[in-house]
Length: 571
View 1: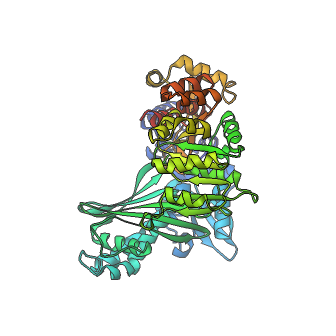
View 2: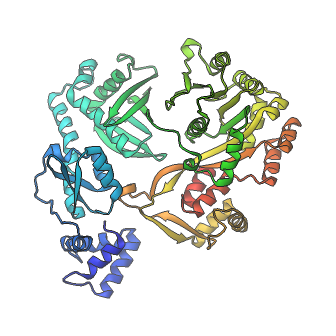
View 3: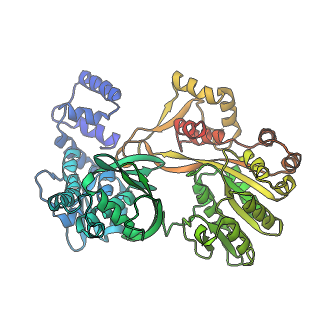
């Protein structure tokens, strides 16, 4: 779709201008259908799509190309992966030794053009085309996987009961599995779910924390696909009744990726979940994590302490490990010895000694941590404190001059302290060693390409009031540096939906946080067996922001939406 300003200018240059009454009617229709005015005008035949885009090409000073009926060679169109082409609405239609010709519906998308320059090593020459022409060209990407399926169905080699090893090595099966993996990477998925049903196999991707259907495969290739993934992960082909776990690595263009594989038997076969781990991913900075200025200062102060514990809490999938890796990235200096015991090792960090838990070899968090203490470490990271033994070793390490980083499963920061005492750790040890507790959740970020401001209506205001008092919210915004100059108490942001975010209005994720600094007053309360509510009350008096309050500030400054904050904090 064209940018608003270009669209309006192109509209005014039509040979047959639209009368104001028709324009008002179709604008109302677009709002009702939650579509753009451009889509409604084209779909209703009120304007000619080609004429509109030819006008836009003149205004943008970009050549216009009609793709309809144009034959594009497979080796040219495949220079841009299908998911990138679909998401960014771009196809390659011609190339020579040094140049690649790109047809786009938004030639002002500089990021995509630069990305393709780097990926292809060719100089892009950009053309404007119509959305309908582009859709037609994008269908070429589906023919490849359809061709693999046709070959399989004609051969009949993948029927249930066939030779699994042979099935896994068939080229069409190999290509389908490769397509599933590559598409997941280009879509930015964190997990791939392959789920057998009675008559078909679903492939779903988790993108920004939400599962999305990617493709449906015929039941006949189920065994072949599962066998192929088992071979990649070095798992037993003939085991169908017991869970299996494994890993494998691949390289897609310049990126090295690891996949953690989990297979469990289900009613209609075996379900596979693969977690994508970027091998070369660098730790994020505290700013990139989404910490507000005051929170960053608290965490930076805790990091600088020579010993003690930094605990990160939250449910599975809330970004705890990413936060700890970011802290390790700051602490990773030549003069210190950093050792970790993890399950699994999600990212490789150069200069850090990382160990993987292996229960079969009796290498648990507790035994691993005990061994690490004999390795002369300055800083230790424990993937998770699950039991009394691990908790006691970690706390003793923090007492004897080590800085210990660890995760814990609790819903908020104050609950983490009684949780340790519930494990059997004496309260005075918890009070003495804990430096800071970080509780967190992940929220989806608003797509920056279709972000727009809006005012909460009465229904939404009433819904928000159930979770947070409106007067407290106004006071919150006035008290914090990020929001005290923003006017409009009920003015927030949301994504309208565009091709870059798959019409969801969201692109990417970041954390919202609750940071509890262990002050002398909090320490004293822990010593006297204070409850989580008692600790929270004192922490609030000392200025601690709750996760919901942090989320509301992030919503106010346009990072996320009110709905996202309520979704993750009121579940």
